[in-house]
Length: 386
Ligand code: NZQ
Ligand code: ZN
Image: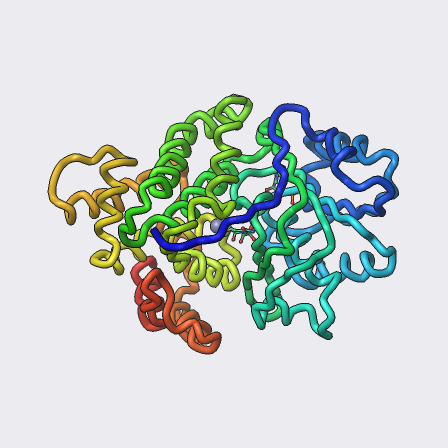
């Protein structure tokens, strides 16, 4: 097991009818900005629950943060935060709204001239404007981690940021929120969380028995609840296990003491930036090619995963590892998620080269657990996924 430090300060308030607890979690007298997305919260009753809980606070609303939170829109919110002297933010939404709020948390106290530098120059945030979240869609784990991913349409970029100052103070997770989520988004959530576990697991064995079993149990739980959630999002027990799995998949715990990869996300973000493909679907496209391309480096863990998560028993390490990739692909297909890039775009020409060039320019010369995946390899993986 590798050395590690672990600290996660986010308070989780989990369960039925917990949204009203916002009132006791936000500091009394705070001037609050409530931020949300394109309006789903106005159709499913979450808006009413939140505004009722915020009675007694001075509140400024900012709606319209789009999926893949857009930099230019966030700058409008930033102007208001400064002009109104907001001292607490409440994100009501999924990864996009929460990530947008994390950017604002950093940007509100940033002393540089151009907030995009936080992303471009990977500036870590050690102190941000405090915020809490009401999670409306399980997927990213953003409700209990300190990372964010921001999109900039004008330059077709999608970049990550983070730092210990960007954990939410609290997050409210009420599994009842998923009843209004369209099937497509439920499938995205399951796929995203599943891939988060893969990125922190599919490397090489390090004798981290407990972390491996944490990871395997999250994947097994997602596999178990997936058909129930897809058939009936009002199935509370399935919804509760779904939401908690997504949070646990990316709150820092399972990555401690083990190597991680994150190449699938790095490549996937480019596909969203270039083609607007849903985040989770880009991951389903890249996962099979990435594991096939890096088969020798990953086959021990692939085989362990095949045996323990999928119950594969037949054959040697290579055979089980190969079958495990097929099982993973079939799982994504069972959620009606296509795993070929050609299903999402016919504008493929030049894509692999463009991504290779961007990674080269950013100095991302060695990705993966061994820091050996060169931009030219990335181009090959993208080509394989078409
Ligand atoms: O905008 P509204 O109208 O609210 O609709 C949203 C949106 O269209 C809808 N939705 C959310 N809750 C709903 C609902 N519809 C009905 N009922 C509800 N209860 O769902 C759509 C997708 O929302 P979004 O927030 O974009 O989804 P998700 O949580 O999957 O977030 C994706 C973003 O998070 C980033 C992704 O790159 C992407 O930008 N990620 C963030 C990570 C992190 N911070 O740790 C890690 C991830 O790997 C990921 O990169
Ligand atoms: Zn993700």
